Length: 76
Image (cartoon, rainbow, N blue to C red; front, top):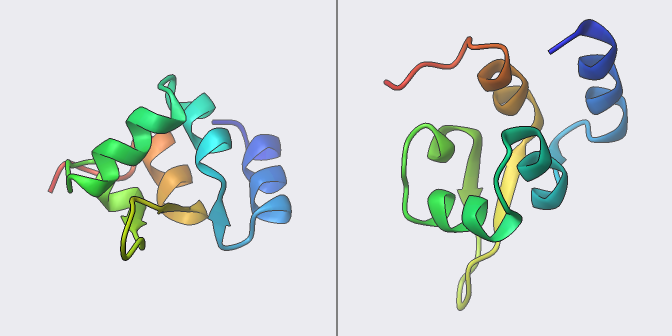
């Protein structure tokens, strides 16, 4: 991911990115992204969290997503 895109994501979404936006960068649907995070599947569980109490509601965190897209976030 180039520096300009990283800066824009950080400016627009300083803490967390909408699942719809994050899913587009990952090449999957927002629904599938939400499922993978809710199931705790790595590496997706490392970039977001399921914060729903009665239904699945995920939050994708900006910095971990950028690190993942740059290949800096491992499977561990």
